Image (cartoon, rainbow, N blue to C red; front, top):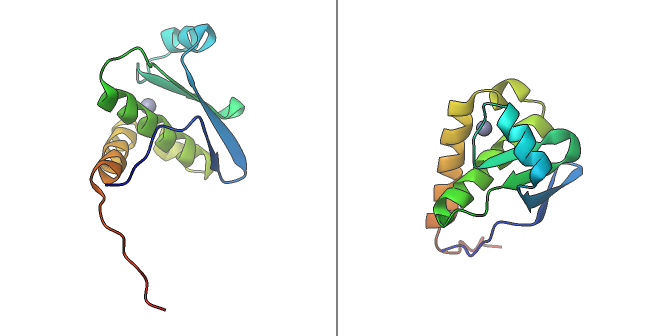
Length: 110
Ligand SMILES: [Zn+2]
């Protein structure tokens, strides 16, 4: 299985995104929006906020991928797809499953 952790930062095209625990500002934004309640992404600030208080690690990971899919779609000019929460959540689940189940190491022949 691939070893991975939710990162504290990552690059998406030419921007560096920061991943942090939901703070009071993000909490206020969340309260004012009808969005995925366990995470939030702010494209202008290149930030992803996660609710790390949950004891459900799978939920936290899923929330990370959910917000990552939003940020990737918006960074690559597919904002219209990012507005489709069902699509974003399903794609996040498939991506999460990939990281949970991928095994092996294919060696390319030279
Ligand atoms: Zn969402």
